[in-house]
Image 1 (cartoon, rainbow, N blue to C red):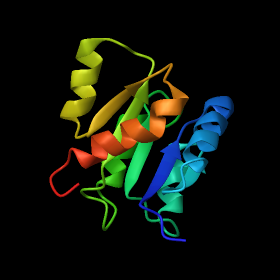
Image 2: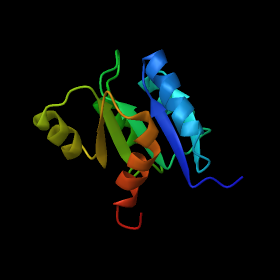
Image 3: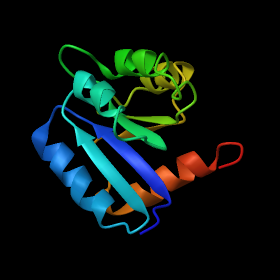
Image 4: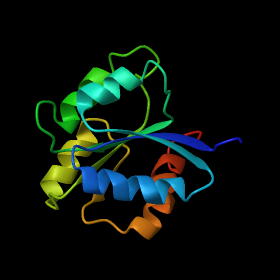
Length: 129
């Protein structure tokens, strides 16, 4: 099967990760891989090459912005689109995340039914997307 988009979703919360996984896997155009930590996400890049990374902001040990910083150092991922997910609804926080190089921010709680559409819209808004 040909997938339109390979997604790496990184979140330390098992329930949210499972929920996101269910809804991403319902989309026949998505192939998704889940990681429970920043370290696990970076390690999986050896075998899974994502078209986009969906990244929780608040995680222990290595937060989302640090994962993004390290992702940019991995060969072939200097431009991989990253979408942050956060419960911090402040405009300043969204602007800070976008300034780090994110292509979008999805607020938690999110609408799981529109998640696939939101991801496509954010990635599709990129040049060549």
